[in-house]
Length: 210
Image 1 (cartoon, rainbow, N blue to C red):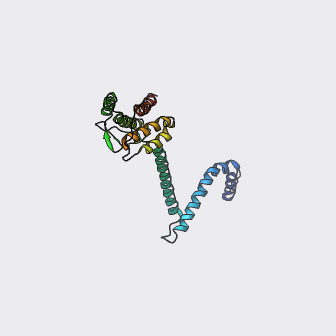
Image 2 (tube, rainbow, N blue to C red):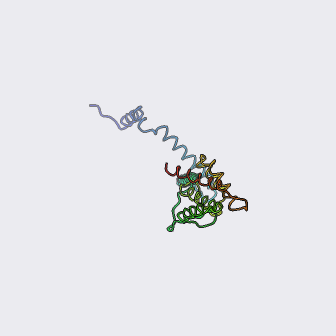
Image 3 (tube, rainbow, N blue to C red):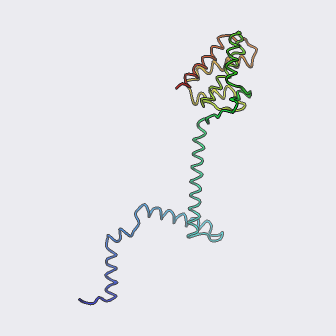
C-alpha cells in the first residue's frame, strides 16, 4: 500500500468536507440564518447606540438586546391581558353581609324584596318603584351585566346594558324613567310605572336562568 503524505491527507479531508452532505449538515437552515441575522442587527444597533456610553457592543449588546426584547414581550402580554380583562365586567364577589351599593346607598337584596312587596300591597307606587328598580340594579350587578361602582347613574347602567345585554334595553329604559320620576321629582307615580319596573325584574330572572 502506498504511503499517504500529510499534505495528501489534508487535501483529501478538504475534498470530503466540501461534499454536499457535509455542507448541508454543517450550515444552518434559512430560519436559523434569519434569526442570527436579526440578532446581529440588534447587537450592531445597540453597539452603535451605546458605543459612546461604555462601549457596549458585540456579545454585551446581544445580551442587552435579548433582555430588552423579553421585557418588551412581557409588557405587551400584560397590556393585552389588561385590555381583554377590562372589556368585561369583573365577577362581583358578595360581601359577607350580602349588601350592595346602589346609587351610593347600601342595600340588602332580601330586604329590598320585602320592602317591594310591602309597598306594592299598600299601594305606595313611588316607594315600590324605587325599591323595585334598586333590586333590578342588584340583578344587573349580580349577573355581571354592570359593575358596582360608587356614583353610577341610570345612564351608566344603561350603557352597561347596551354593551352586554342589548336585548334588555327596551325593558330597562322605561323602568329607569319610572325610577327617575319617582326618586328625583314630585310628579305623580302610578301603578303602571311599577309595572315597567316589574317587567325588568322578570326579564332579569329569565336572563339569569339561562
